[in-house]
Amino acid sequence: MKRITLRLTLWLFAIMLYSQASAASIESSLKTLGQTAATEKELEAALHGARHLKPAERFVIENQLRLRLAALQMQQQDFEQARNTLKQINTESPAALQASMLMAESYRLTGQPADARSWFLRTAQHFPYRAATLNGLLSAAHDAQDNNAGLSAALYSEISRQSLFALGQLDLFQESGELDPMAIIFPSHLDEAVRKTLLRRSLRHPRHNLLAQTGQLKESVTAVLALRRRHDVLNSELSELSQTLGQYQQQQQSILQQVAAGDAQLAALMAQVVPNDLGQEQVRIRQQITRLRNQQARLRAQLAFIERSQQALPAIARKLEKQLQDLYQNAQQQLSQSHAAVTDILEETVAQYRAELSDLAAEAQLQRSELLLSSK
Image 1: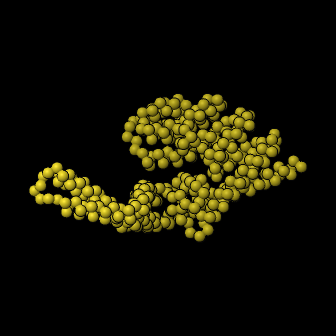
Image 2 (image 1 turned 120 degrees about the vertical axis):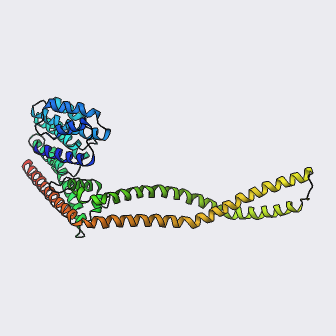
Image 3 (image 1 turned 180 degrees about the vertical axis):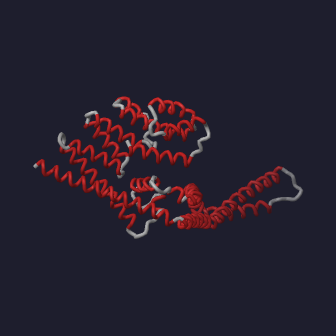
């Protein structure tokens, strides 16, 4: 329960960092959420009040309140009601991992190991490489040793596999000898699930606020992401333009021939014009000349467009890449100003994460070996 309360406190801090509690309902809900000794009645009242919050605020606070309520119901041995409460927690919310672990624990505490193991495995699939998840699997494996040694061995193998893979990713992150925060903040060469786990742990550092330490990066990071989106859109447009240009270029020789033929035809028609003659034949000739001039203008405009586009396209691409490069360098420069603090947080986070993974891998391998030896 202490571990759950700590996580709730950290998420509450994140909520307070990013949202403004302007309405009385959000103040009331946050007050209740921050109370470690809130009663079931108080939590239900806070849930009712949270209905009036803005969607983003409601999404976070309602799920956190439900998590607190379910934990309290489990303390009161009301496991069925606790499960009903946990099922209402959104799987995309910050409370989802704790909710899934509590669900598994509820079955373990009521003597339903098969359901508990099922929930532990489901949690491992949806929230891989997290110490809390792997510790849950370890509990499930211990619980299964007497009744289902094969399943217990399989769980130990999964713990070992995930722990060793995550350790390998940490080695990859540290192989240069210097930690690159950008490899954690942005998608990088690291496995995405491990990267997000490491970033999440860094954001929840118990003594330092990574968001505050890198606050000056916020505008640059936002600009980088916006520019990348613009880059993707423009790339799509440039791709379409390139395809169109390719088609035009294939037709360019034909267009030039049409222009030359049109000029010759226009000259021939102009030679047939008789000044001040408004007869039917002369009107027809003048109409042909007008149509032909319009056609020639369109063909020449098409050729001019091809030429302009051929000249502009490389410049547009170079300008965009230069903007991206400059903005990324600016982000790196701003990051370096708080590099020491950020690096300290990452080093501590990586060290702690590595220690937990190493312990989990060692424990799982030891238990599996002993289990296999005892079964012979």
